[in-house]
Image (cartoon, rainbow, N blue to C red; front, side, top):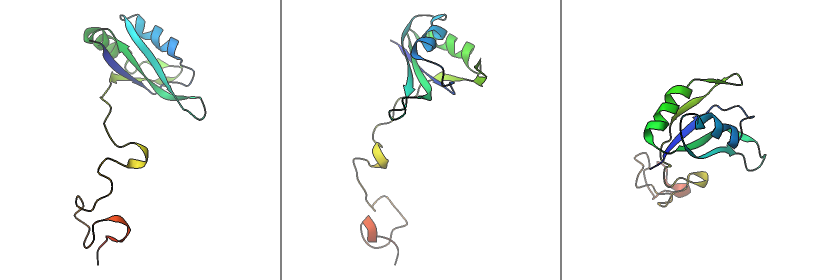
Length: 116
């Protein structure tokens, strides 16, 4: 079972291969990916590393968290699972509805469902 690690506050000069080599000294790295902006092709300043075991991942987190890389103090911790839903513009499967809102008077939401 591999363990996924979040690496934040990365300098824009960091690549997938340099990220992998930094974590490889602690154990087997399954994958290393710096997240890139689709439009500019530039690094977003964070990435994810998958390591072979939880023990190896914890050792890397302890050693690398707060370390200075090109003058930036990097953040290294366990990645949280991606939250489902949300997506583009905050739409979700439920759509817009006033049933969840206590501040709405008449109507069922939409553009005219405010207080009267």
